[in-house]
Length: 452
Image 1 (cartoon, rainbow, N blue to C red):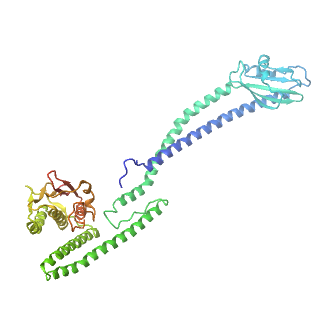
Image 2: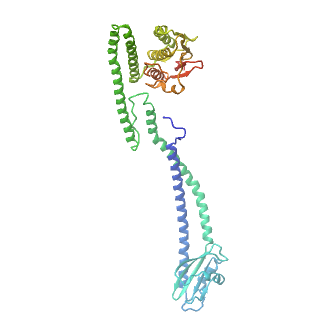
Image 3: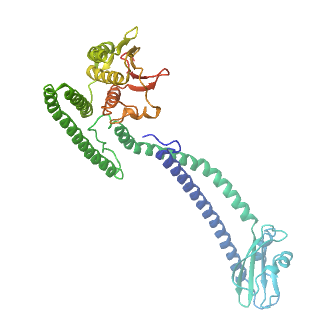
């Protein structure tokens, strides 16, 4: 089936492949992001655990009372050695400062300490020595409150280093996996669609070879019901066509005998009455003969494997139709200097096709004109007349059964050219009709040559 110019075909395999590839890379990216986020969360959890542990250590070593005091060096020394990255603050119940490991930073951080005090984590956005901010944890110790603050610089640097190293490593590790998965997906799709392509190729031959059914082996179960339904439809369609062909052949064959009897009895009538009746009988005989030819062509495929001499076929046609041409005052000529090469085909079918073309030309050629059969190499026959020609809008449809042009002569059924078209197609050839500039029409039968 030909597609409309605006319609664009798309590939199922290509569409599924790139969508699965996008899904695969998306899943890999999400997995990498989840691992990275889990690693960062683990780092932050460790920092938070260490911060809480420091708060509890300081709270466990607080002296009694709510007056300023100093903690032992074992407690304060780790904070002082942190270069200000960690420091603690101890507040009294009235928010009065009792102790700290860094008085300068305590004054700057005091405004960010929650009011009123509450246990848990809190964040300080930015300090002079900590552009990345600090994280703090507040813990009640009796009537007092212990707060430990930790800078986020180390955590940020560690996180950035982890992320850069992780993504650098994951790209080289995950990307080959992604490409391998994509390749496997494409190959799997191609292999999975191969049975469907085989079904499509078989379906393309059904018109030329009746009786063929679409194969069911290797198909996915989602497609099998569709193919089975198509096979059942093909069976019903062939049964219907066979019934129609059989009816047409039997009807045409059954009419031959009554027509022959009718023609014989016309000889006993008076000549003035018999002439018109004989024309009607001849017309009916011609129609029945064409119906039989059409039924014979459609019932079984032609055997086209015998050598055929196109010149001999043309001579046979001229010999048969010469009396009719003489009766109508038309010259019937065979032209062509050389002889076309032999073709593989069916001699009787080609004679029938050429006979229909010449009869058609004799019906339209005026008295005193000529109908010419021209042989051309390598395997082409032209039938040329000087009749009225064919209206351009009728040329394409005249090759269909029961189609007649606006200038068709009375008595025809529109089957002659359809028979020629079927015979040409059975031989792998073509039939073309074209009007002549000087008047008349030329039909060209082209066959594949045996040499080709």
